Length: 224
Ligand SMILES: C[S@@+](CC[C@H](N)C(=O)[O-])C[C@H]1O[C@@H](n2cnc3c(N)ncnc32)[C@H](O)[C@@H]1O
View 1 (cartoon, rainbow, N blue to C red):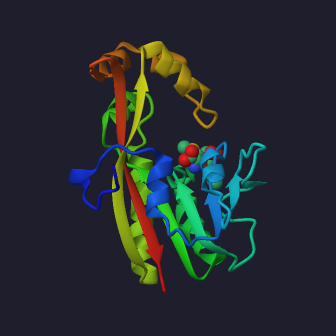
View 2 (view 1 turned 45 degrees about the horizontal axis):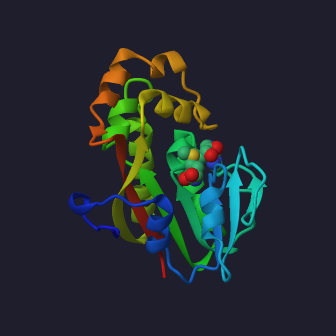
């Protein structure tokens, strides 16, 4: 499977495969903003590439270098990274800080640097199952608007691609357990276990598993 430039042909991929295919292979100094546990940051380290993984709730790990910090403002000097990535993190930045977070990302890029913004869209069964207790439509739309605004105001050149993220579960309890273990989530388990959520989850049965998918949009913005 490979990335699609059209929403209509998006296929299922793993996040690591998707970003690895999308990102310029020549990238040597990457800042991953909102890295979470940093697993993706670690996957993106290679012989030629160093990765700095930043998060307000950073956890120890390697080989990516972890730093604790916020996207807005970034605790990083100007013109230092040839690539900056927001991977499923821009919509988590408070809405009134998203514009500053993007400006900060541009500030720390070198002159020919490239910005990557990878964001889930409110499309797919993952969204439908979670909608009643945690609807991210508004924040995901805000993140999309802020990226559009950055491209317009800075006359950036954008390249875009799509894929579907997919998770498979044996039963409802397995899904709830995984959801409640994600450290950045603050869900009420009673709301997660509602009849409405269970009904939506049951609709995701496919052959021998429950399969949840979410469409993901990838933007590359450059100014060279
Ligand atoms: C859905 S997780 C994505 C984690 C990781 N990038 C990934 O794709 O697996 C969103 C992350 O954004 C981080 N985040 C929230 N607010 C932030 C902020 N103001 N600045 C930087 N990161 C932030 C959270 O701590 C969380 O780790």
